[in-house]
Figure 1 (cartoon, rainbow, N blue to C red):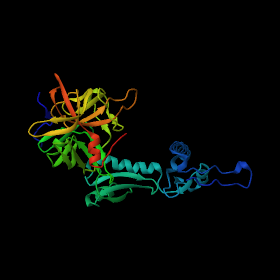
Figure 2: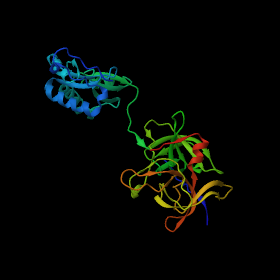
Figure 3: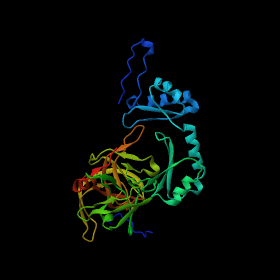
Figure 4: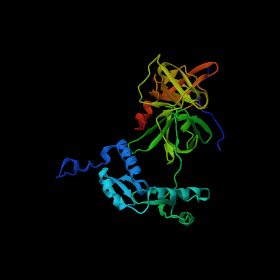
Length: 365
């Protein structure tokens, strides 16, 4: 029986006080609404006052300094009505309908928008439509001001990018090898890391995931141990506490690191054989991978794995019941023998060791 690391080699290309009336109780003003009222109460109040004001409504918002609820109107004579609703009135030039029309005009011109225009939105307190332009680019400013509607151009440092997730069991690509994501973690400085197998991170360099660059190898330990970390350096990368079950169900969420003992049920995830389950057969095993590559402290299981699954997540059997399934992180696939056609033995590196060694905290539910 040949035991081997499972790496695939590839070619990579506050509330305001109520007003006290000194007349009859019927003349008392209603309590003022503020942030403490909560989202549901404020949403209901906005719907009511918006309908009441009709065309004179000019949005509502919370004053970030006082916490008071402010309602805008284009008709100053409606101020008493707004106060009666529990809000602070503010007379403005443009109605909510006007601002929506201005925004829609920009929307209609989006097919020709320069790449330096990061977006546009309604600034309700300022009563303006704002166009965000990267670095104050001249072409972006020209596009914004030529729309024929009043806008304010704001300069921003960078354009937004869609976020993508690094999830346990999905692909992790090195210069010359393919492995799988184990778990996500962070340190005291809030730096984020992806944990995987050490015989994968020993390849070094820049590391990619399923949707782009993640970062670079930070730490690596192999042999003796088999763990390593990739520091996340890209701002568009999200590192949730999830593990991919592929065709076996929705992602599970990592909730801790309680160890499953001998005979206990475990499951693993990786890019080659996806979601496979089995039982723990032995703890603290020393494994000889050949060529002097001896790794200590591994856990033996009968959950099959194949090349490419290395570094992937080993977790406890998912919780039962409805809703999101929770799991306990066990470790990262290291190596094994056999395959998923005929069955085999697979070893994982316990995750607690790498967390302790590198002073990391696991991303959890």
